[in-house]
Image 1 (cartoon, rainbow, N blue to C red):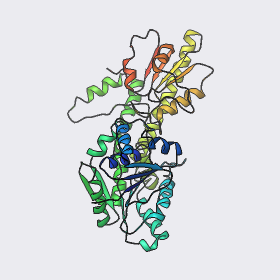
Image 2 (cartoon, rainbow, N blue to C red):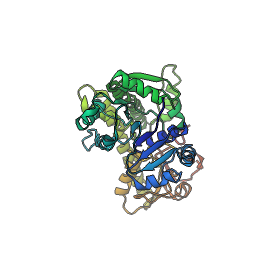
Image 3 (spheres, one colour):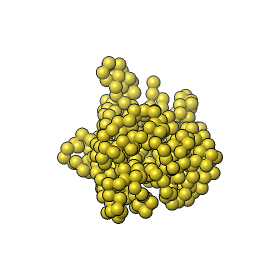
Image 4 (cartoon, rainbow, N blue to C red):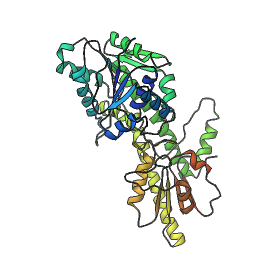
Length: 405
């Protein structure tokens, strides 16, 4: 498959790594983002997110002139839509970013082009975007290749998984599926699995809903163990000695733009059929509320015992260990709740993967740990595992298993 170029709409946590990887294969990539600062940063050969190895890929691609960023979509043979799909306040999916990205591409489309949506989307979104395209550009009816191919990578290991993970590719017709598979073979070494667009859309939602349900079981178990006075980490370790049991580790909730969001795309469309999926969302959301209450109770107990207000350290704000991504982070929610309930106590917020934050004042992790009377581990960042466990009279609340075992 010979390409003159690829145009990527969205240069965030997936769009930029994907663009850089494609460029590393000698293919010219024009990336578009609405954030001028992001565009400027990338064109310097630098990155605006934390992701291992990404800096090397971007710097090399920009140096060779194979990756350029701009605030406008550029003409190409392949268009990748890699923009966020958040949910509204009522948990209804919001596909307005996908629609806006599609409208930006509309004037540039030509016969034979490949249009791929990678953004996580409700079932039927690809069909809706195809209808939008053909409504505005009727002369292109049945002359484009439109497909859906969701990413399935883990932050912190994106560059490796983009290459080696299998991909599910669903076209609007067989020709579109084949065209998209030919494209992904240029940079994906994992197996490519052909299907239709609707199945590919639901497959992505299914993967993350399955993980959400599994995490909900672990989080619910942690609530039971806490009430029973049992160490949940030891409990799970022992239960997992069973040859057919593999319980995940609990945390302070579930975050990120995938697992914390995607199940709602199913629940909103199929409320009667998705009882377990919906309940898992409730459990994982409740775990964050419960953790905030535990911190509040520890604060009150300290005040009664010592007749003074404690200093608190909130350890971690990202949605998972060793990254800088705060999207839908339960730790961020808990930090907000702690600050709201503060009565003038010193609250030290820690996130070692961020230099600064527009809302939170950040404190170095060692300094916060040293100063605090109450330490709440919300994210199991690797830095936290180096802290001395002999911590005197400190009250330590470990919601993520930093010191488990």
